[in-house]
Every structure is written in structure tokens, then in C-alpha cells.
Length: 181
Image: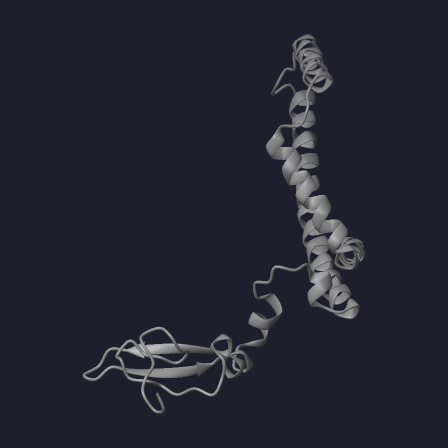
């Protein structure tokens, strides 16, 4: 029993090549890397050392089952939320200005074309189409319930916002600052 290799798979550190790799660390902190060469060998990779060598963004944005409230302190959550909110607000502001300019310019050009006689608008037909659209909106909005898929997504978003209230607050503040800059 002393010095003999244990049976296959019965002890941590045992290689499939039937040679015993002695380990002083428990199985949870090590990973074996098996290489197929002329003679089979195994190499032990210490997970603690492996984690230390990972880039900072992997540590920050790595997969975790918990919410950000469980992973990060309040200041980190506010900074992450504020920066992402500011970026989103700034982009939203620029795209919104561009869209408003395009829509306003389009209406302006249409009015000029109508006034100069290039186009004629049949206002009675426009009025009929608007009335039909109003009726359809009233019909669809009066008896419509959210589909189960939409309801489950809304519930997921609400749960996320409740679990990450500090991050959400930072995002909202950053978004408003981004919109105003």
C-alpha cells in the first residue's frame, strides 16, 4: 500500500497513462493537462496561479451567477453604471439630433414642394387614412394582453433592475449627463 499507485480514477492526480502524479493540493484547485507524446505524461495547472495571470477585464466581466451587487462594491457599481449611462446618453443625443434634423428637413422639403406645386396632397384621403389608423390602434390596444414571452422578458428586466439598483441608478444619472453634454 505504501508507494503504490492507486487504481485508475481513485485518487486526485492520477494520470490515464497509469503513472501516478503526486499532488499536495486538492482536486478543486488543480487541473490536469494531459499530453499525448511518446510517453504519456501529465502536467498540473494551479488554478490560483492561472487566475492571477488572467487579464483584468476577464476578472471584471467574467461569468458569474450572482448579480453585480454581490460581485462589486458600491463605488465600482456607480462608476460602471455612470460611464455606460453617459456613453449611451451621449450617443442617444447625437443620433436623436440627426434623426430630428432628417425628419424635420424632410417635412420642410415636402412643404416647399407642395407650396410650389411639385406635389399635390389629397387631404381628404390623408384624413380617411388617419381615421382608419386611429380605429385600428383603439381596437388593438383595448383588448390586448402581453404575450407570455414579452411578460417573462419584462419580469426579467424588473428583477435585474431590483437586484442591481445601484448600477441602475448610476446608469440613469450617467444617461442624463450624457444627454445634456
